[in-house]
Image (cartoon, rainbow, N blue to C red; front, side, top):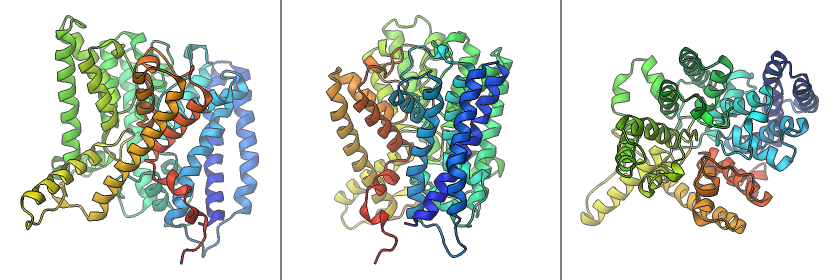
Length: 488
């Protein structure tokens, strides 16, 4: 690993974050929150003062190239750096006076998890609420993707290495030959969708400030709100419908939107991940509608559909918004939501979870193995969208599943030290590891994570990071060979 390249890149990421803090500072200035303005400017100035000398002293030479190990180190380190610096405005302002809680809120924002320790979010200043929601938008598409899109790259290979390290899923690919161009295309699509959603919300009567903050949380599939009652505060079927549709849209693989722009409709039609994603959502909505109506939770189909579709869209995409206390729903409906937490959104989206593409690959691998047992001499391959998957991809998904299960149960064991009921402990790990937000029981949609111990909060913070980076970059950082410059 080239430590100079890694340090240089981490300093660039931190400097970019300092620049981004000027946006909430401007919002605070608009609302005449002068103390909050001072906090953001102070943090931004201090971060910049620390990082600029590092950038100048670690300038990369022409003969130094970034490799995948460097990209992995930058991915893991970058998310920790932005979360630590991102917690400073909360902490220094005193709006979240405990640093552990401030760090939990910050990493939950950047990883687009949406789990919170705040009992009264409306007590925050407008500028701090804006920063809290803005962390979702920054983290949604990926901090490194944003860095690649905005900052000049010293090497042509750097952008691709960073994007691969931050998005290690089974379907990562460039949209166009150059990684930087791919990053720019992604952010153009991301921004256009975000602006479109803001327009729809404003049209529905939501104030502009509320619309922007809600869009940040929806686009990043994070779920931080600016009202204690969440989206339910507005009590509008139209606004809930807009948020539902856009949550599902941001849970799609962004390659789909690129295919639409390029008029490659055949690629969309053949996309099995898209079909499974939409089918899972529709079936889940139907089952929860029927179940909640059968148990008298809702007395009309329109209400059942309104609340079940919102909650399914929110959980499936890992957004974490809630307009209903689904913890009080029948067990069948709650079980469906927990299963959706594990499945998650599509690869290449802003959503979290295990990812629909991995579930598809595992199902097809199991089918291939069963067929092999029945017909030992037959030749069977695992296919995706009419393309044969190489054995490395199939083994990679199986390996990820094993790592996923091991980390999940180790985390569950640590969280159990809080002596909560099993449902609360299990879903707290589930919701943080899959970047969802609310769980069930004591961490349900009407509760939060404030009462958990500091050990549990740091464990869940690590789970959020592992879930967002899909484990591999963080675990690779623990390997001794990562810190050796050359391997023989």
